[in-house]
Image (cartoon, rainbow, N blue to C red; front, top):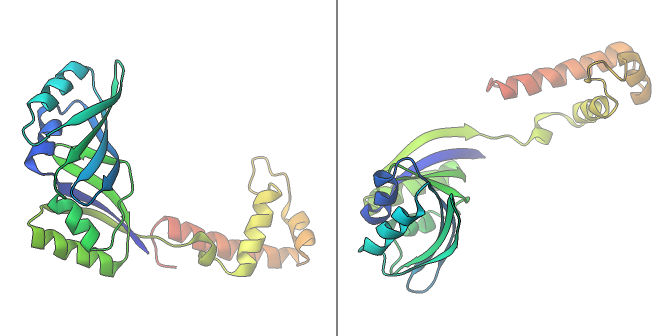
Length: 208
């Protein structure tokens, strides 16, 4: 199943937090939808908490907020949007669940999604329907490491790791490993070589 890194353009109100203060770090830690609103928990790492408070007090898009925590460098803020933003509607319509935290960067929200090609296509259609600007930065095809190897290869590699065959210096020789696994030395070498080749090719993104 592929994973994708997406950037979504934030609405003008929330976007100004990151565009006007590019040296601060903004992260959405959680959201919760109610029947009429969307509650957001935002973490801000800043050298000037007072400036953040002034910005929130002057924000016409933000009817109310609560500071849950503050110290010299970090603020935890909870606020409520009085309607479900188009970005939130589009994500729900595509069947996705966002993985938190989400970073604000210069007016964009950055997210990693574990998805399918079908759901990713639905998400792009939903963004376009809602008029949301987005960027697809990367798509990676993930593979279950266990399914990458045959059952025999997985058993041999696991045994080799547990017995220290790959340690430096080695805690177990190939002969000792072959004896434990009840195969010839050449047989153990061949099984490990094929398994190692599949692992290395997968790591480098080469078809296996």
